[in-house]
Each structure stands twice: as structure tokens, then as C-alpha cells.
Length: 326
Image (tube, rainbow, N blue to C red):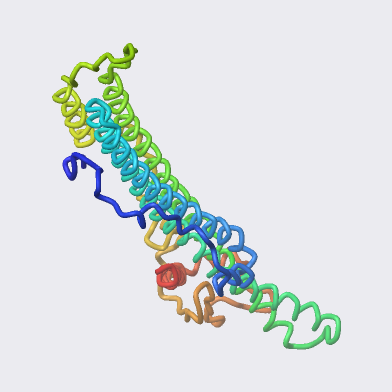
């Protein structure tokens, strides 16, 4: 708040005005090439956001440096009016820089939420890869040994793999929508807060500028003394009061999250009578179903039928993906 300092003069070192925006090549530059196709675009977006946030942080430091230099310049003008007003304008500019820093912090929070989507995108890739692998094995076996008894086992495995993909895709869709809204709720709310608070500060800075009498004088004529010191101080006090009383004026983002179970899948889509079926989890997004409970004959159940019998699988996949997200 503004009561931290009524002046920016001689408060900052020259090091505070330096930019540290250089980027260096490192191992992190190679991570994008290691991402699954499904998460590569979001990975790139999140990485670009990191550079954006760094730019806002640099801009905040530079703005503080400008405020300090403005105050120092005003002190050297030997003009009492400029000295007083420039120092108080510098205080407001410094506070505007602080809002820029807060905005960068909020963007980092929004970025962290998007990472949760990226992690889930990453976690569903194994089940998709497994499904494709099983499909390829079936095609090869049908071509080489169409009468092989192994085909029955592979077809049953394909049903389970398709069911796993349905589970993962449903959860991915739900979490993507929820976290997308949440991330940009934070982002846009921060943008509104930054804009409104900087508007309040800029208005008080303009109020200070009106205290400067710029009436031309003739050579040898003396300027009248500055008699608006109390009005200038009042402008700072009003700015501080406005920041303290500021409250969000935007409409909240609506969410249906309360209607979704803890596993990010609507509970009504799962049959409670199937909870006794046994499963084992091999990895995030990969579920092995006890085929003895679900598969009968050569055809077996459809993927949708298997999904209806996977209440515990939904929950376990969600737990694994939450662990991956953290």
C-alpha cells in the first residue's frame, strides 16, 4: 500500500532497474520434444506463459526504477512545485509497478492450473498407445495365423483397452473443461483487478498534475511558492483509501463441478451394483479388468458395457492422475 513510503527518492539501487530477460539453452528446451502428441501444444503454451510472466516481472522492476529516477530528477530541478509533485507521482507509479508484480503472480497461479490439464493429457497417452498396440497385434495375427486361439485373448484385451480409453477420455474431457474455466477465471479476474487498480492510481496521478501551475513567466519573474502541498498529500491518501476499499466488480464464473464425483465422472453414470468387480491398476490411465467377471464367449462385452462395470477403476485412475499432477 501507499503508506509503505511517501517517497521513492533514494530508495532503490541501480541494480533494481536491470533487465534479466536473456534466455539460455538448456535441458528444459528439449522437454517439448519428449511430450506425447496430445500434450505437446499445451506444453508449448505453458512454456510461452513462463516467458510472458518473466516479462511482466521485468516490467515491474523497470517501472520501479523509472519512478525512482523521476523522483531524483524532480529533486534536482530546484523547483519546489516539481520537487513535491514529481515525488508523489513517482510514489503512484511505484504502486502501479507493484500491481504489475501482483498480476504476474496471479498469471503464475493460472499457469499452474493449466499444468493439471497437461498432466492428465500426458497420463492418458499410455492407454491410447496400448490400445493401438493391441489393434496392430490383432491385425498381424489375422494375417499370419487367422485360426490362432490367441486371437480370442487379444480381442478380449482390446475390449478392455477400449474401455480404459473411454474412462480416460471421459475424465480428460471433464477435467479439461473444469480446469480451463478455472485457469482463465483467475487470469481474467487478475487482469480486471490490475486494470481497475491502475486506473485508480492513474486518476490520482492526473489529479496531482493539475496542482502544477504552468502559467508562463517573464524573464526575471519569480514563481509563487507552492501552496498545494496538503492537496498533494491528500491525493496520495485518497489513492491508498481507494486501493483498500477496492472489491471485485466482475461476475463469478459458473461451474457444475459440484455435480461431478471426486473421480471427475458423473456418479449417475456408474452402477453401484457393480462395485464388487475386481480390478488392478498397472499405471496411471491403465486398468486391468478381471476378464473372468466380464468376458463370456469369443465376442465378450462391448467397451461401453465394460465401462459401466468400472466404478473402482474410475476412482483409482483419478487418484493416480492427481498424484501425477502434484
